[in-house]
Image 1 (cartoon, rainbow, N blue to C red):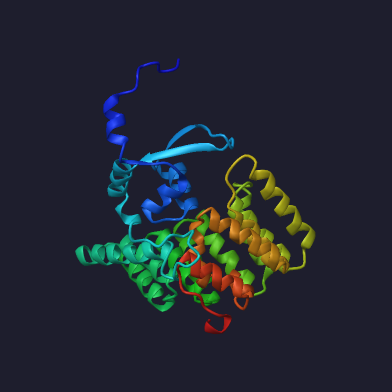
Image 2 (tube, rainbow, N blue to C red):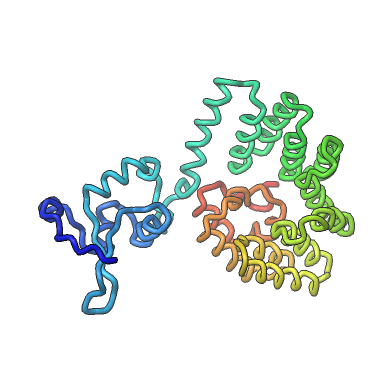
Length: 322
């Protein structure tokens, strides 16, 4: 039932010099692009009020400066972050700002509790995103030393070896994780990825199929086996996986990065970058690791990858840096 109460005159008085009448005014007041504040309204409850359509049949909006100021105080971390919608933002923008903030927090956690294995493990994620792979390996070795019976810590060290292109060590370390937990899926993923990089496609597919046997609709593993199909010349099978991911996406969220992965394996760079741009729009978190991901190596010399990583806010490297 519609609210038929008369308007509160106090609200009208308060709003008289406090009101911003368009998306442009709201964006200018916040110092952001229009599409950024529109995204904040949808995703982060930015206090924008809607009116009926104007003479041009376009929906009208307004916001109160006092409410926007209160929202800013609750979202202080965004104030100093460059606008991801602003094409002039530097390479230190986007999620890179949050990564640097995270580094301070990780270091503080390690200072407070240096024997906390998980802190070393998570700090290694930051180091990986920043391209500091030897340091990431060192942190994960510390985590394994502190929690020697954890399959997670064991497999994470194996992943660090994978990102450093040390594929034999990847397989060996993740086999140790499977000794601790024979059904540990992440270890199988890492083993499969390492076998693929060694050109051992049958072994790679066997590792992925062990996971799909009990999780047949796992989109990440489907993308990995689809990529291996593509690299090994099984293009029809790779195309079938793409179709399967599209069908899954009608029922659940499937990151666009997964289709980009298969198109990379197929050698279709234009389609790969089309889906990577969609992944950027989706704010897919794995984009911060592209610099360390061997599966992205065929794209290293394409300037579109460097541009994407600059917008994400992490260092870009050429294929010669590995």
